[in-house]
Amino acid sequence: MLESNPQNLLLVRLGMGCSLQSLSSILGTSYVNISEIERGKRKAISKALMSRIILNANPLPSFEDIKKNYEKITSLSAGGQRQTAKRSEKASFTESEMHLMRKLEELDIGFISHKTLKTSIGPVNVDFIIKTKSKTIIIEITDSIRRQKLESMSYRALKIKKALGNVLLVAVLPDSLTEALERRLEDFDIVLRFSDIGNLEKSLQLTPHAAV
Image (cartoon, rainbow, N blue to C red):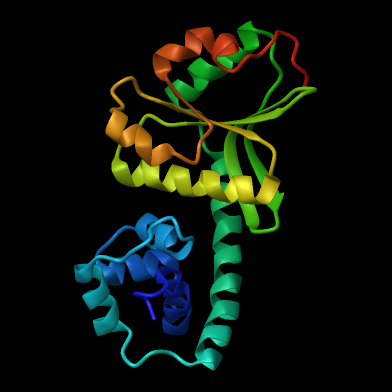
């Protein structure tokens, strides 16, 4: 079942009643890895991971299990997303966010910060939104270069694209970000370093007086 089509892992996960995070914890892998398998971005499952799946998903779930758990997980996920979005809206600005805001204000570019977007897949909070006549830009900025954080950002970017469609997604990270880590952000359209903020209008092809 999984060898012929690794995306069937989604059915196994739903049958087990697991979220991405809980299954990744059970299997000893990242939830981004599980997500990429389910979305077909990974064409095969390693033998070691396959063994852990078989061990923990025995016996295989029924269709009724899958249907029931899908409804349950969807409901719980929506509630958790709403709480997370509310906390993000009230969070204090980090030093790097303040630096980016000052640059946008210097360029007289309108923006919205810590905005929660209502989408078909639930609420998603983003750091900055810039709306111009030609495009909508969403900027996510972080001081962290931890692999888990970057994988989480990439997964969020994928959700935003799926929900909103035609947006330009930008990640701004510390200068110490390596090329190997940058590859984990493939769902972003542009990846900038903190040192690029000084040339933000050139990097994003922005013009002053861009209106929100």
